[in-house]
Length: 149
Image (cartoon, rainbow, N blue to C red):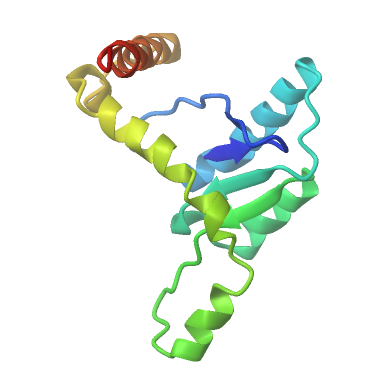
């Protein structure tokens, strides 16, 4: 999940769950955490875009996102649609310019998978998984910041 605020900054709290749990079950909890976090730091998210991949493309998810005052930018899931007109209709309201910012987040997820401890996590404590995730993000940030000098 990537959220872009009104000024174009990418923000999101991290929701950590076991690997065998599907992302769509995490969405309601993650939205609640995001709204609570934004309220705590006095950040107004009304009108901000929430980008998700095609696995989240459903009326229920879009409705819950809109109820929080956010704009859902979810890549349309073509499912088994073959007709070009039906596919074009799906992409009519899709905001591709906002969705392209998601690449930065997906690239970070790809980089974190190079760390074996994160790819195969057998830790039972949520705090341990979160700590290793923060360590990996710190190492990624260090590498991207100082590798170009």
